[in-house]
Image (cartoon, rainbow, N blue to C red):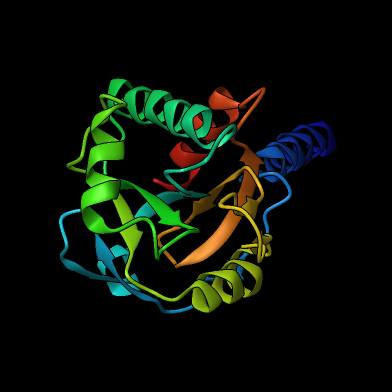
Length: 192
């Protein structure tokens, strides 16, 4: 009888340990996403509530960007295609313009057309002030956006941000070079 109890205890203990080993998103952040109000590349109103209950991947770009933004958008396009191939549902992509006075809806629409992306679940946003996007990026996504007094190149970081259905930033990833696509797909699956 003691042997059976010992074996049963070992099985239960092993099952409990293996359940503890199931991991969610590694190094999860859980920053709450603040409300915002913007317009899309189609010149339609758009707010955070449009994304409530959805998984979304965000980045910060601008159309006059001389270096990092076109590769970032191409990388996001690749991620969008991988999400579609994996048949992952309820996933949106959001690109915030960090140069809203230049990036009108029409300019953003023309920019988006260059990448062969699927516009059904990817929204480009503008229609807010420069001060707003700099503060919003810093306070919500803990990332830098700054438009210098001179020149037309906005300073910004090159991360992709994964936001869960609970409207919290879950994780950041390299969005320019060495993009961890498989890790991002895995993390998106975890949130499904």
